[in-house]
Length: 158
Image 1 (cartoon, helix red, strand yellow):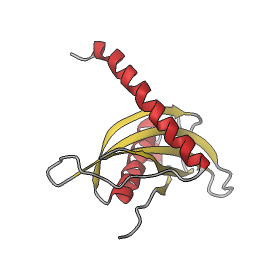
Image 2 (cartoon, one colour):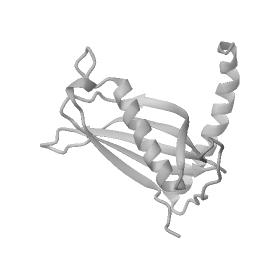
Image 3 (cartoon, rainbow, N blue to C red):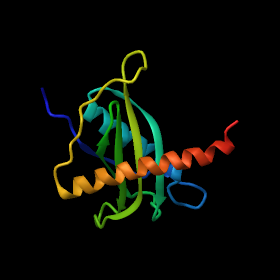
Image 4 (cartoon, rainbow, N blue to C red):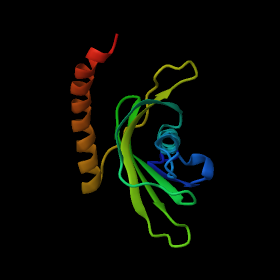
């Protein structure tokens, strides 16, 4: 059996239709690119169709200008039975200089599903390096925080 693919990088050119009224790439376009990379990463790991279950902690650190070369790096940092926590980092640069700068980062949770839309078991990811262990442990802590946030958010749900 082929080893699952843990990470992927997607590249885009920021086009005029991606720009908001302020002249920068709008957050919705960046979030779309993030979702595409999270899907490609999770499908590569699981070998299955995957759906987005959660996107959070998104931080827009710096603007992206039209014409920029954008890279969205995605990697698995935790696996459950059917879910994968994907860490994403977006960088951008002028394609002539290739002087990259981080613009956005977040965590997305994807779930592998079968043909009927039911959750399906995926390969387990085991951290190997110190950096992997640190990211894995952070993902576990974030799960606990999301539970607390979810409980607090119940007030807004009818």
